[in-house]
Image 1 (cartoon, rainbow, N blue to C red):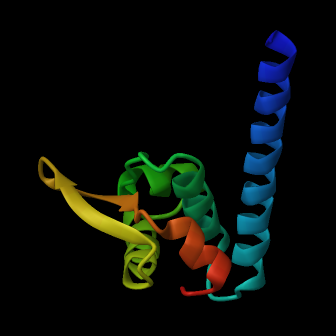
Image 2 (tube, rainbow, N blue to C red):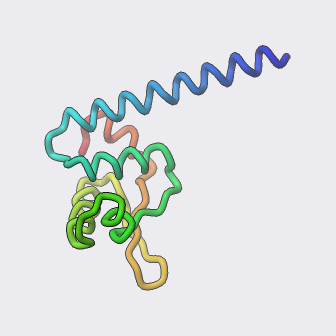
Length: 107
């Protein structure tokens, strides 16, 4: 019983790793996205509940908040992120169909 559970876990992890690799390849094949945007999309894909904001992206990539905000807005315009508010700050989350949109090239 434990062996079957471990086999299923290994299979699941392999499939998740394959999906993550496919997403990365799809993102890198599109020259429209810069390295910061690719990183944001990979994070959003790997953690669909992640809340992203311009300040965090700016600090992570050592750019201005305005540059980070432009990156996030471009991803929102492409239908990959959705914007909301937490208190007074704008935050972005992955759309439910982010993986499908990336893999199908609908961005």
